[in-house]
Image (tube, rainbow, N blue to C red; front, top):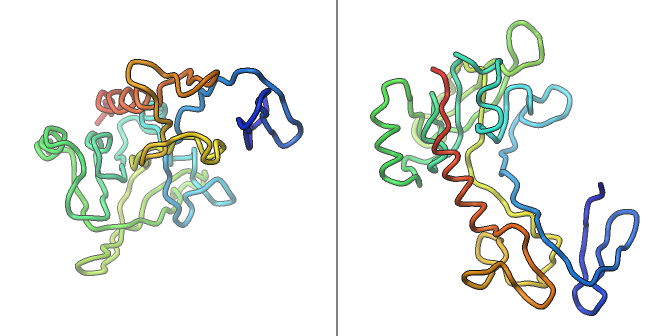
Amino acid sequence: METVTKVDFSSRPFKIFTDSRTVLADAIIISTEAVAKRLSFVRSGKGAGGFWNRGISACAVCDGTALIFRNKPLVVIGGGDSAMHEVYIIHRCDTFRASKIMQQRALSKPKIELIWNSVVVAYGDENGKGLLGGLKVKNVVVSGDVSDLKIYGLFFAIGHEPATKFLDGQFELDEDGYVVTKPGTTKTSVLLYEAVDFLLYKRTLQLLCQKIQIWM
């Protein structure tokens, strides 16, 4: 498996470029889907001392039922529909972008606590196992106070970015970066098709996130 870095649709055969070679093709199928957006803050990454995949994730659907999270306090960072299911919801503003029905569901659940106007820094567990042990939560609007939040799982719910940058402006994209297709089909031009309709994928993912159930 190789990573495609660039494509050239200016003439036939089309050209597909990777880090190691160039491939010629008469037809291209694009099935790159989308990548979850992540925040970057102290110890949120994969490097030394980071907690990525060691308590921090961008996919509650994939990871939310893991044993390390079961019956533990969890946090989601975001303000959209997929954020409205967790134990703590941390949002950098004082209003949500989520639909009204999802906001009402979250606000009506006594086990969900809302933390407004805040950003976070992660720290490790007290057992020294290299797992996420909590967050330092800073209010960035009102007081500037920093509080300690003892949690064991953090999920980013701040949207998705379609993996279409490699197309390099050769096809029309919408404002979110998804390939624009004709209604009723995924055909975009002669001999160029999308195997996955990005808009359908995005909506399907949103619906899946709404069905997430976290053990409390």
